[in-house]
Length: 136
Image (spheres, rainbow, N blue to C red):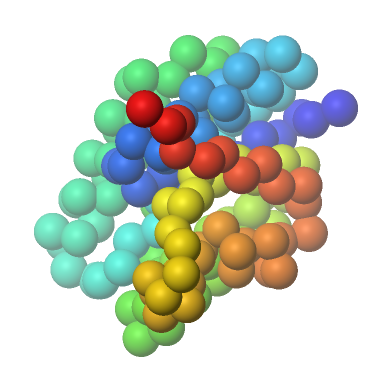
């Protein structure tokens, strides 16, 4: 069913949970897994941080076939820039499934901050799996 599974990571625990789900799906369907991270900022330090996040995710992944993509988000658009960058990467790579973690924000925080996951639902034509934080 799925041949190309992309997961967006940002170094958070929820992103790690999303990576685990994406790995399981990729292994189940013998699919290629692409781990993507959107960098906000254009300094070498920003890019290195993004590369470090990708390398850490890749080293912890247990999928058979793994690619990584470091994409540039337009910092002027805030969270929308991250969503645009991930959506564009999913389209360019022709992902069948995009897996993302959600921050599970509520109330005013959600209203003011918004949600990258929500924006991705509106922007991505592939199927999307949203992974909620595990409750403790």
